[in-house]
Image 1 (cartoon, rainbow, N blue to C red):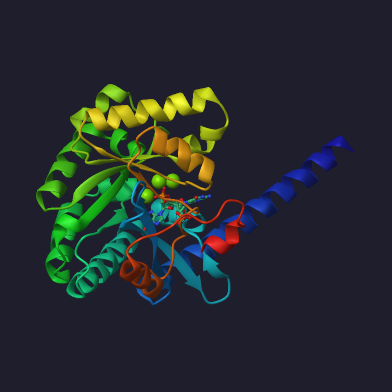
Image 2 (tube, helix red, strand yellow):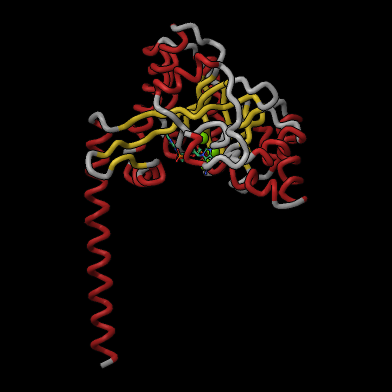
Length: 292
Ligand code: C2E
Ligand code: MG
Ligand code: MG
Ligand code: MG
């Protein structure tokens, strides 16, 4: 009996594996169609100067408008895109869309803000990246000095020597560079100065710990001091509460991004935010869903 039960479990296991493999294949096929077709959207989340409330930039965040599944967040398809290599055409689409939108806003007279675009590890490792960025910048006609490329610590550390050269070449094209999710990637702090990084983004997990006692605050204070001592601008990610904002202000963090101000919004709404120019935090206690 134990034996037949074991066999049954093995069959069930194989059936599950099979179903998961089929679902994955289908998702891959759909994602391929999405990248080639018209199903991707680029939304924009404001970055705000803490002291003044001035809107100083946006981070471009990709969404997939799936015909049946509805709005799919990046967590639901970026990992698959990375595994399958689809991240290369997807990443190029994102960069092209972002640079076009930036150029259009600049033509409308909004020159004083920056636009950040995420690059994945596979993009940074790809030999054609610098040429792709050069071509897209040229075609779009945007001011490259207003573009920021966000790279995670782990993407850099995966191949530090190659990454450093790539980053230097990218920077020579005009964009500034930002280290995303800082604090999560196990890089030693002393490593940081070896890379041409202009902006340090404190990961949301640290911001969350700000109201949970002395230690969390110490950690964020250290990151801010480190960034400033290396001449970097520091952005706190994932700011959700007035309490977190107050601590960040006290610690001298200059820029914040998070649901307290706004979620990512479609391009037209982002244009309206640009027209307004300043943002205020949602009142304390407001439900999160009302922030976007
Ligand atoms: P990320 O680059 O660290 O982007 C910030 C993420 O945090 C976004 O999630 C944003 O919506 C979310 N966020 C911002 N403020 C708050 C907050 O106050 N509370 C909470 N709970 N979340 C907040 P999103 O859009 O789901 O993107 C997740 C990740 O997917 C990004 O993390 C980035 O790593 C990746 N991603 C998004 N768009 C792209 C893209 O165009 N290309 C690549 N390669 N990766 C992308
Ligand atoms: Mg980012
Ligand atoms: Mg981040
Ligand atoms: Mg993140």
